[in-house]
Length: 380
Image (tube, rainbow, N blue to C red; front, side):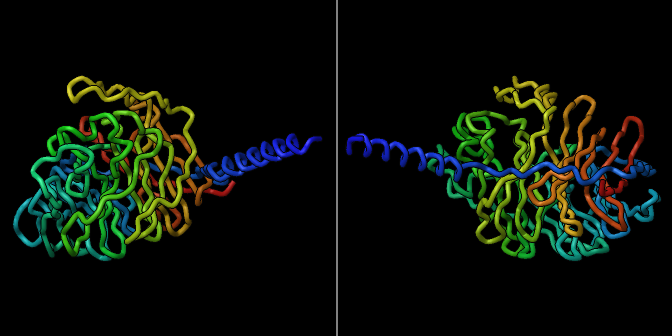
């Protein structure tokens, strides 16, 4: 073989090997599927309250269940068999009342943290005595923003919406940072916002609010690849939970769960997740707030996240049929899918106590039904 031909052959082999190596480095490992658990028991526990709204949500705190109702500004302490033991809060100025209607709730040690629709944050003791009220501050350097060059922390807002399929959970780390979904709204930046082309290619998805400073201190994170070059305003919801202060973020329109490093870096470490086959990814692009039909939700979507630190399991809810709210729950250990089962209605896993998992729940004003689920998992 001539030297020139040998040289070209070696060059081709070198390029081929490098290409294979580069391709291998770019492969993403979203975990494996090994169904190790199965649903062992399932109970529905109904709760009788004189009045309640479908905007509420359940919480599990040790042996107690709580039903928080934003419309009535109440917190109801409930036994595991559904008996209402005591009602706290109410809208008012007394030390045991909350001054504004809340939407989200989280725990910071022994304290209850509430967040409202007007950037208001309220801190209460374990027994619901008010400690502090304040407004978190969004830095503003201009009254209006004119394009991508001006996109920074000051353009983002915590736009809280009522969504009955979310648990309205506030994720709070040990450094007293609250992690929340943020978005750029048309009223803040008319030329670049969640309804404009290219928004999901560049925009940050998560904001970090420091309780001590009272500021939205930074925004970070990017939307998964499924969002790029789309306008999915109705699929803009995000779901956040913490694992040892790492931030896990799920997205309504993506099977991927993103993992960000703890404060202060908050860098994307990896993504994982398995696609639910019955969720149709052909989602309609947003046209306008007046024209885009909500029936795109019929295609299904992913929702609530919960991490059980005792058993190192991550639960992710999903909906396959919005009209009937049929769906299911995926269960992951680290990156691997280890269980999945079907559900009906809202089913957000919210806690674990004494061998039982608890899920939120049945909220039906028309039929006067309020309740939560209890279930167990067994190793197959």
